[in-house]
Image (cartoon, rainbow over all chains, first blue to last red; front, top):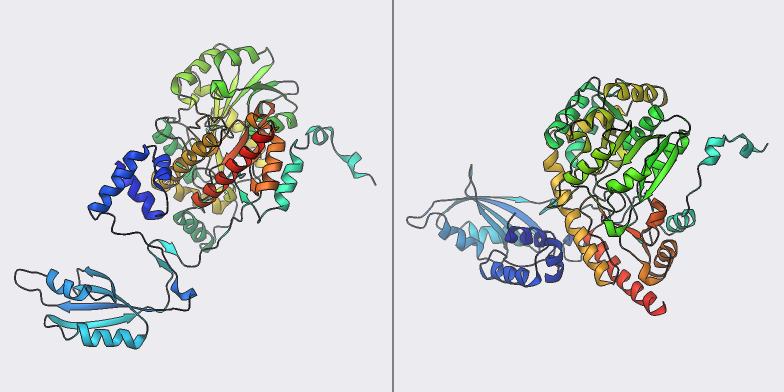
Length: 162
Length: 393
């Protein structure tokens, strides 16, 4: 695997690894790792570093909905223009162009069911090129970005095994 | 009634472990300590394998299998051995599925050792070799391997240990606890020593999948002339994180495997059917299951080696298995004292090197089968501990 990809894999799993730790773990020197990471950030390959949070265990418990949006692509712009108009709203956490029965999959997070419904009916549905929307609320999260929500912490192996 | 007096000479002859006290202490503190003392993967068995085990139970496959193991599994094992290590065996006559690699070791020793026969055991090594030999009435002949020789068995040492009573050589590479591996040339040099002598080899290759670039495991059985006197022991525990399933196997010359199978049949009957069906799934696409775990061990091993050296402990670079075996003599402590104090003062469990043979004295075994966060924290505590001890010494 290339240097860049090795570093990216490690950071995707644990963004808190230091440059020195990355260097040791990949067998590269720290200067190379620092330069590579800086370049990856500059090139927008690394878009940010964030924590994976289970909000259900907090006093904030936002509502998440998947919204299937059917749209008419625009001349010269394809789907990109309408997608941008939608994903620029801060409530939109993810936005994907899809194959199949609808065009855009929009993942919206807001404080309440009502707020999401309102956002869809006031901001998305009225857009000229939007033909229809269908909103699905998430009831329970089991796994997200490769992380399971019900992980057991701690080591239940025996104390010493030779 | 004094039940002690009922115990056989054999049972009495097995010494209680020299580091029993340390084990007890570590067990008592379980849950409050970071444990880098465990010889098993921290990964849970990959889901596809667990799913196959569950499916097997759902189907009601809860009966005995053939003694030597399901033929489909033996065929899968032989195909894998051929593909991965260039070793060809007949699934019907040269392969037996066992309850972990440990049973296979015991079976071979019991199949070939008469009272008084000598078995050469390079140390430090897996703890069961010596005990299995003693239980069979054999005489363990330890050969002390040193850090200066990268814990590799040298041809001269092997030649020197051989006597007319030598019957078997225990060759455990990639090695637990040192992480040493043997290159093809080194294996050839050992084979040359054995060439004209009537000595069998037990090649314990449990960690064969876990070697780190640039090294790659080479089996002594792949050498012409060695295959018909070598039994290769391997298993699913380490490579596939399947320790609790208790499933391993041995491949070797038909007469030896037949004898092993006979003992296996009376002592064990067969390995668990559920585990056998799960193992078939593991061999369907082994590389895709093993490689993410291998990469993780590789990264952690680098972290631990680097941390030990920074802490001032000389450390041989392990190229296989998932252990690091640093030299702790600069602290002026014995292996046992080092581990006891480290456990008590810094709440990290590691294993004294002398648990693996006398030549392990002065060393400790640190397992890399733990999360990066735990390793990171444990290594910070190690640096602190060594610093404190060195200023004492």
